[in-house]
Length: 177
Image 1 (cartoon, rainbow, N blue to C red):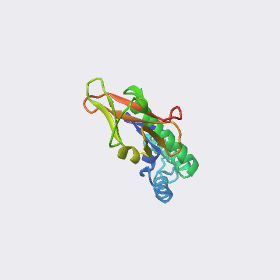
Image 2 (cartoon, one colour; image 1 turned 30 degrees about the vertical axis):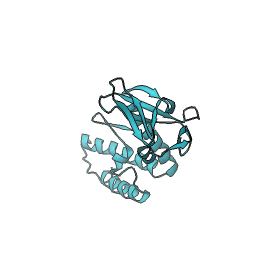
Image 3 (tube, helix red, strand yellow; image 1 turned 60 degrees about the vertical axis):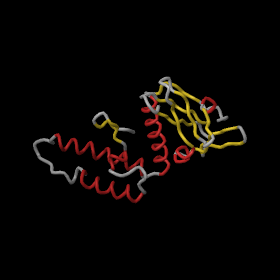
Image 4 (cartoon, rainbow, N blue to C red; image 1 turned 120 degrees about the vertical axis):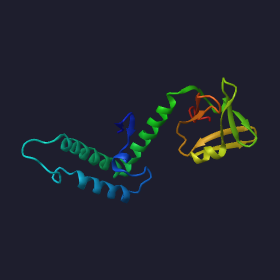
């Protein structure tokens, strides 16, 4: 669940005002604070009619409640985090001009991968950057392989060093990367 917020997407983490790596305790504390401030019984009610701010607060209360229901459960939080990563990848992929495999990349001696852009510069990434993202670049003689921890298909968006073009490096797509 991603919420529109001025052309940006508001995540459930934004709703609860916590970081994405927040602990259960941090999420719970933020939820409790928000729910107390937004609870309909706490809001001043007028006998004439409910103001638009009260309606907005009521909507926000429900959004906070939904965020808590998802983020407080480790299984639903994991599913949500995967969907969030996927949506971010999809947003980045909108600018991708080409999908490339590991076999398309030029491998330098220092475990540095590059692919030439049509502008003449390169899309590139080194093994250290890949490791920070959870991917292992392995060399076995003349064979190079790229693995994820879970061996599921994945991808990395690489920007060109000079122009605005991007390529998507496909990982474990056919199981042979």
